[in-house]
Length: 359
Image (cartoon, rainbow, N blue to C red; front, side, top):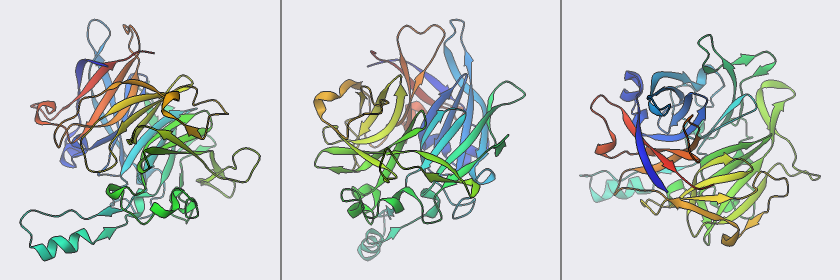
């Protein structure tokens, strides 16, 4: 993969104050706009492209921020972060998913050994992380996409907060259930990607990785018949199962993001634990087909390419297929968490990579 150029993402003052721009975790293209999310707030961001004389994106600006609490019920209210780690777009909906993870407190520099040991023993659960939100998309008066609480009979709706989150469903799962009490950075449950293929959602897990095999959960959500503001899961296939697990041999790496590309699924992979790399993009051919396999060995996956990463910074967290009028071959837009100093512009912008890759 070749990094062709970088484009600047320009955020408003409030989002820079909240450090959303340096904690980007998800991205999806929507025409001339980008939908983005950071993992330290409970908001969805929209940026709009400006193009150069060749029809290529030069930058994204005209920032708009939408509070999730204005659209759906958040279990812990509007002020607690939702740790949004994935965005997907299909059939007039924008989907947003939290990490569904526990977190272990960090050791702080200068603390005593006793306090450091106490922090390492402290595990925190934040309820807003355990949601899946479905938001109606409309075209605004300016011709640009917007998310709204209601569009005709379609309403914003949420799964989670009522004992019905994705991790609640996994309590008795023989593979993933044992990892529910484990914090994300300890190889516990950690959702970090979502992709919509028709009426199905694929949910990628950064962790756990089981003897080198990464996990992906398939669900078929629908509006709850008793409450249009809630979601429920439809049984998959002929049985009564509300989800289906897939295991992919990604060489010991976890899933950091998912992105549809035709009938295929592009998978951003990276370390499960607190490491920088390697970071790769893999292709799962035919993932959108109904008969997609539950077990996907390495030889059935294709390496698209390697992505750069830093030393304690420049962590690739989100990928989106970028459509440009002059494009010769497909391109990916890659956004980074903890961007290095060279990715931060003088006026508070952040540089994302435009990467070419083979079909």
